[in-house]
Length: 227
Image 1 (cartoon, rainbow, N blue to C red):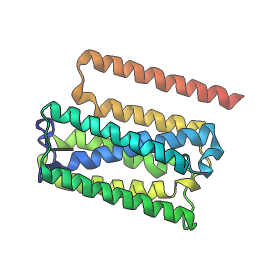
Image 2 (cartoon, helix red, strand yellow; image 1 turned 135 degrees about the vertical axis):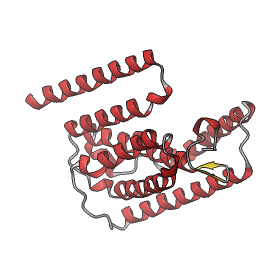
Image 3 (cartoon, one colour; image 1 turned 30 degrees about the vertical axis):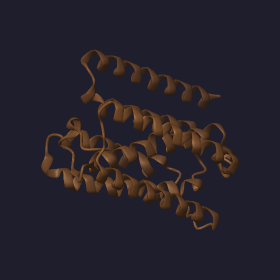
Image 4 (cartoon, rainbow, N blue to C red; image 1 turned 90 degrees about the vertical axis):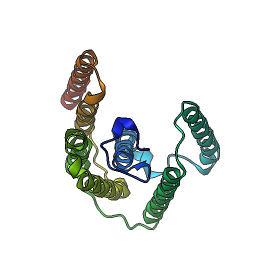
């Protein structure tokens, strides 16, 4: 999350890489969290009606997570990447904001204030997510002058994704076809977004792998449709 030389044209302030921080938060929110829940919606529709983890699970997973992050920080410092005090402070502040947002989401789900959400996943998250993931790599490193509005746009998109996730329990009609469409778009986004960090041979491998995965998913959805 720091202002490193590899991302020197991103918007940085007080030692913190603002554009990259927001970008990575949004990327992991969709790739790791929402995608996992989409898969559960398809293969185990009723599982998300109750919390995935119990309180006892948290007693185990929180110390394990603390240990993992501790060793990651030790490894990072040993490699010569010693963060400054101010960016660490800003990241801790950001973490507190996320915890507060999660707490509010929990409360809203408990008191039943969630509203109906369209079952059309593509209109809900895919198009904004695709734009947010690709545009920084198309414009960010070429037109530094637009980094400020671009970062603000990513922040607004992150807020939108939070609101979408806050209503996720009302998404009841998640089909395999929708999951395939979502996964295919995510693959294409990763393919385009990672092109700056790949060689020509690895580009060829990545494109072939994505075509195989998307085609295989389409064939599976088509077979299931006719059965």
